[in-house]
Length: 340
Ligand code: NAD
Ligand code: TYD
Image (cartoon, rainbow, N blue to C red; front, side, top):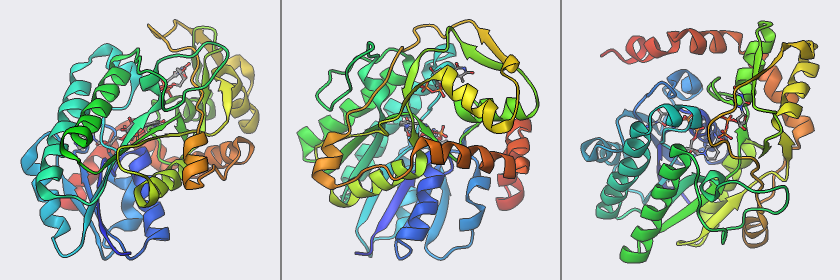
C-alpha cells in the first residue's frame, strides 16, 4: 500500500537510518522529514536522498504547531498520512547538565505533535521510545512491556512523560498510536557523543577512552538497521494502543565494548581511562522482546560479532563525515545547501 509518512527527527541517527531503509524497502512511499536541526540533526546524513522524488525536508520544531502544520502541507492530502516520531533530545549526559530542553522537545513537543496529528486525522502514529523509561535492572531479569515505568535520568523521565501523553491520547481520544521501546542502538550516523562512536573516534586518534565508574554497567545493544526494521513492522502490523519492546538479546558491560573496539582497531588497552561515574547511572538494561517476536514475527538479523566490526569500519571509511561532525562544520551545511 502507498502512503505518506511524516518522519520527525529524520536528520538524527536512527531517523536517518530509517529514511535510508524506507528508500530501499518502500520506494513508493512519500516521506516528509520534519527536523529542527539541533546539534544532533545533520542533513549530511541524508545527502543520498536529496532531490529524490517523494522525499521532502521541512525545517521545523515539533513543539511549534505551525511547523507541524507545514509538514502536513508538504505531505498533501491525497494519500493517508502516518507519522513516525523520532524527534527528541536523546543524550543522558546532556540531560543531567540541563533538563529543560528535554522537557521542551520530548514532552511539550510530543503533545503539540499529537494535537496537530489528531486534528489532521492521521492513519497511524508510532512513538519511538526507549527501554530507559523502565529504570535500572539488577543482575537478573528483563524489561517486559508490563514493567512499571521508573525512569532515573531527566532524559528517561522526559521520555516516560512522552509515552504517557501518547498513551493518554489513545485512551482518551482513540488516537491510533503505538509505542516502541528499544534498547541501545549502534551503527552508522550516530552522533559521536554516545559510547560506541565516541570510543571509535577517540581510539583512532590515540586519545583516552573515558569509561564511567567501573565500566561494568550493562547495555543491550541493537544494530540500528534491526531497530528500523522493527519500527516498520510495528507501523505496518502493530496493534494500536499497544507497546512493543525491541531488543537485541545482546548484553555487554561497557568495558567489554571498549575492549572489542580497541582490539578491532589494533590499539592498546592503555588508552582506557576510568573517569568519575555518571550521577544516577543505571546499572543494567535488558529487553524481553518476546511480544514483537511472537505477535509480529520480528527478530534481529544482525549479531554483534557481525555488526560491531561493520560499524567500526563505517566510521573509518567516513572519516570526513566524522571530522565535520566533530569540528562543527556539518552545521554550516544547511546554510550552504538551502540558503537562509
Ligand atoms: P539523535 O539525537 O541522533 O537525533 C534526534 C533528532 O531529532 C535530531 O535530528 C534533532 O535535530 C531532532 N530534534 C530534536 N528536537 C527536535 C524538535 N523539537 N523538533 C524537531 N526535531 C527535533 O537521536 P537518536 O539516537 O536518533 O534517537 C531517535 C529517537 O529514538 C529518540 O526519540 C530517542 O529517545 C529514541 N531512542 C534512541 C536510542 C538510541 O540508542 N539512540 C534507543 C532507544 C530509543
Ligand atoms: P550512552 O551511549 O550515553 O547511552 P545511554 O546512557 O543512553 O545508555 O552510554 C552507554 C553506556 O556507556 C552508559 O552506561 C554510559 C557509558 N559511557 C561511558 O562509560 N563513557 C562515555 O564517555 C559515555 C558517553 C558513555
